[in-house]
Amino acid sequence: MSPEVYPFVVRPLPYEYDALMPVLDEETLRFHHDKHYKTYVDNLNNALSDYPQLQKLSLMELLTTSDDQPMAVRMAIHNNAGGVYNHELYFDSMKGCNDQEPTGALAEAINRDFGSYKQWKEQMKQAAVSKFGSGWAWLIADGDGRLSIVQTANQDVPDLKIYTPLLLVDVWEHAYYLQYQNRRADYVECWFDIINWRKVAKRYEERNKVGR
Ligand code: MN
Image (cartoon, rainbow, N blue to C red):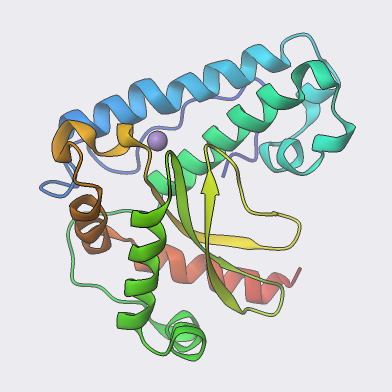
């Protein structure tokens, strides 16, 4: 996540635009990253442009201090800081096709809290496919390392003061429509093949180390 402050910059993808084919084709990824994600970055910077005190805050701080922000920009910050946070985590949670499954402490936690990887996958898929309208499905961990699956609407984030986001899937139509049209379930099923489990496991282990 961006440790930086205003003005926020568009982070390049950590892989080539065609690296996730055939699950996500180059056109889909280009539009998603270069247009949709960039728009959230631009709009967040616009929202902060007249507020020097807010320009000192990191993305995480902007997302956890909503109640202290001026009403005039509170919603714009909520939506666009969320859009930046969610997309950076999403793009950074994928890699080229692989047969990976979770490993280490994360695998143990998945087995403990969901029964098995297969059962976790079923529940995650259900959360993603059943999200009404635009939003996200997430795998998150609480302060004790307990895992859960949640949905958020629009560009909302889980409560970041309580939970560490480990993994998320974008189910806005812009994430898949060019390639999958209305077949959200097909997109989600294929997305499981490009999860970067090494990074997800690292997020879980670093949360364990730091404690919260
Ligand atoms: Mn998106």
